[in-house]
Image (cartoon, rainbow, N blue to C red):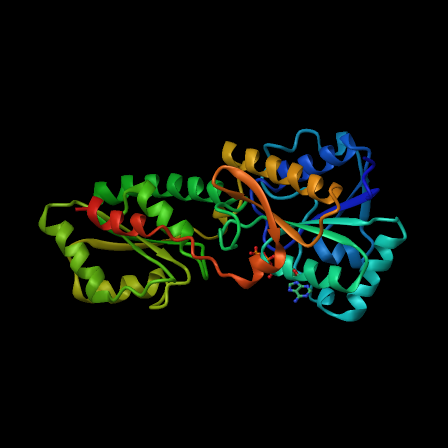
Length: 328
Ligand code: ATP
């Protein structure tokens, strides 16, 4: 059966995430393999409005599978939220006869794609690309696994110092609304405690946990603080704890943007390839306004609407309990 779609464009939007390049490569090559003309949009929705749309061939995506960031660049674009912005974007796509659009990004990106396809005659597919893992409908989002690996590599190094000097380190990791990075990093690095946006931990509770370790002759401790923790960031928590618990010398490290970059893990390269391949195939089947995601070990699609209407409840409660038990 001949596909009812002829020209597909792909863009990355919101924060960059490792694995986006592997995904772009898969989208472009799957499209070309199926006889589709492929286009790349530079700088997300801003590129649609500015007519920054380039043809892509199989060689446009050579040697990028191992690179972090996104070769298509990304941007946050307020203009795309306006009627004029969307109209200009559509005219630029129409001028090239582009009838399918694949967006790689987070929930803001998906909201934009859904609104755009409701208004204009264009089929859209969403691919969850964000290190925060805060999208419903995919067990893992693109970039999340690499971000955790980056975080634990940093924590391992900090632990060497913490242990040599009998120190208590508070390490702040990304995650404004989602504690996924913090929780997995805590388990993988053997941290003594973890503070999450989804769960309030009082200073009393934290100090009790640290005292337990000190009483059993722990020479150092690591506390992972998610940036969205409601009682404050790593500096605030460290200050509150230091005032009442002076067993260790206390230090703070904010990992910041180093968590976003770097070469994608094998997991993210494979996930990006699978999601990109699946997104094109969904468009070829005539589907629209869907998101492809990893569920179990299968790639499945579901309405973007469902992803937007449900919030992420991905925190594995057994991991939280385990952090406590395994840190005695
Ligand atoms: P991350 O999880 O990395 O923050 P995100 O996709 O959620 O990724 P946002 O900055 O929220 O990042 O959204 C990306 C872009 O999507 C925005 O800059 C804007 O161009 C577009 N967008 C967001 N919300 C809407 C909306 N309501 N209507 C149209 N476009 C939107």
